[in-house]
Length: 233
Image 1 (tube, rainbow, N blue to C red):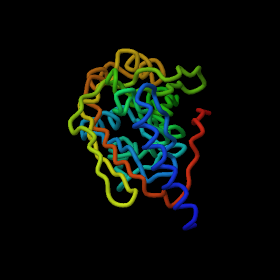
Image 2 (cartoon, rainbow, N blue to C red; image 1 turned 135 degrees about the horizontal axis):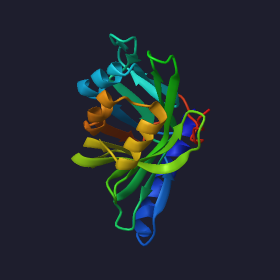
Image 3 (cartoon, rainbow, N blue to C red; image 1 turned 30 degrees about the horizontal axis):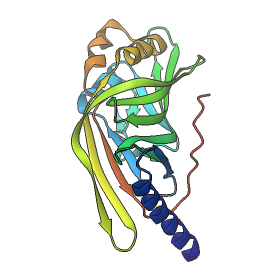
């Protein structure tokens, strides 16, 4: 295990040196082996609106629900936050991070219609933060339907810019907060179509969908994860 840790850290150092010397091209760096995570924290308004239409958000794949479950009055069960392991980053030609991806993670939006007894669902998976265009992308799949691969999901604002800190000998950490997550028009249409949202829920689609907080580190992840894209069932 110690030998593996040394090898991976040496590889990380080599990648960093290569990035500095090859600034003319984008560089993709696998990150699934690191203790790096992206956490989405929904607002109370989001949770209340989910409960209003009997909707529960379920973590799938590599995603993990954080904290204590919140049982809504309608019977929905949700969590304030969900964590997605970062699986890769892309460094642009100016040595800034061009994008980051959480492949293998998914959220399933599960809705039960009390009036009809029908069940509806929508899966968001394999999230990508596109820093160049300030958008979060995801594979969007209605239950039983066709996937829209890497479709624009949210626009965002950078609240706290990623600041990397270096600690001897080879540890790199970084913290970033993105806020003002707003559903794109395409995402709103997908939610409406897949979940058959009633008129009373339309205003909630314009809410801010919380924050995304990225904490990255070159420390080894205690439990390995797969970066294989999540496929909605």
